Amino acid sequence: MHVADGQTFRSLSENVGRFNLRGRKFLIPEMNRIGAHLLAGALRSFGIDALVMETYEGLDLGKAFTSGKECFPCQVTTGDILHFIEKEKARLGSRFEPSDYVYFMPESTGPCRFGMYNKYQRIVLDSFPELRTLKIASLTTDNSYSVEGLIERERAGQLRKVAYFSMVIGDVLDRLLWRIRPYEREPGAADRFIEESMRAMAHTFEAWGKRLDFDKILDALESIVRKGRSIIDPAIDQKPLIGIVGEIYLRSHVRSNQDIIRMLEHYGAEVVNASITEWVDFTTYDKVRDARIGLENSLKLFRFDKAKAFLKQLLRYGGDLCYQYLKRDKAYRRVRTIMDVASDHRVSHLDKMLEKSGLYSFSLGTEACLSIAGIMAYVQQGFNGVVNVYPFTCMPSTVTSSIIKPVITGRRIPYLDAPYDGTFQPGRETAIRTFMYQAYQHFERHGRPVHH
Image (cartoon, rainbow, N blue to C red):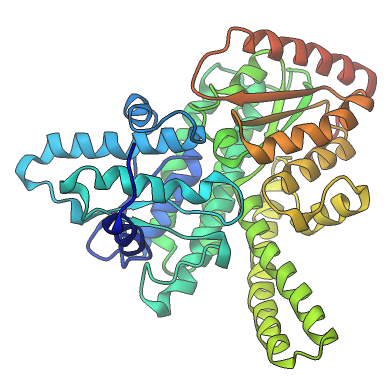
């Protein structure tokens, strides 16, 4: 067992944080495949040498350097970086220089173990003396993923805007895939089309991102959506609509969740997964919410110095949130004039819905806020079933299940918990088949909603 010493603590403070990325290769773990590649394109537009690492091929390495008590995404991403380094050393030999690379691992505050991934991975990297100069760049929910420190201060705001928009477009392409794949004329056509579209959009971000020319990006997206519509066979009948919520990594990382969306589609579903953008919006909304509460309390106590600071935060994060909503809504409006892909939840609406229900509160934080409210939104919209995807032992998702399962079962809406830890559970497919049988029964009784 590794015992922390003074050198370890120094490394955690000096080698994990914000580092200027100029002249270094920026290594991005693949969580959501499309979003990661579009983000890399956006970063390259600003002169950052960004690369999406191969994923899941180093899982054995990840498990070898973890105990099994960690959250499963920690094992996957640890394996990804170690596998990448192993291949780079083999490729470059004596020319391999760890200080040429910066590994990206963001974090969150609060009780979720995600906040400790980069600290643990720093300790793992430091166990190899030659890798101690490889930095870990970390952004945090504590300031809504500000990118200051990664690039020149005067460009940081522009980079964050383009990076955010790349996530929005990544979500749209995902939803386009889930909309057309269950109804494709030719098996495999949707997957091939989206893979080509992902690479084209990454190139578009690289070409136009730095110029903040979002209209050019939307023009390219519109062309893709029009082509995607032609893949659909209109003779195929509508299918039950299933909503997915859960821990952001597991629900997004196809290899880790054993391609659950494709399996649901195989048994007759059309699926909508919670978006990546929803989480980023939540982190900004949470800062707005905290600033508003702080301002109100400071004024009640006549603490005008603190009230001024909270007002400044409220204006800053409120402006960010308005910008995010504006860009996200503009993209979805543009796409939905061509095709009825599912729109995204607005976090403020989820907060009001959750507060009214009395089931949970945004004051308690974690992804449970979004998952519980997201399930309620799916139910309100008339979805035919809901799946909660998460790492085995994930606290926020376990909380979600314990609170929402009795409620949704009482309303006779199919619900499935889908925890994953890298093992293949023999009953998983049976559980999904049973769930889909129930979803079809709900579909036959109630029909399904149009995409909102």
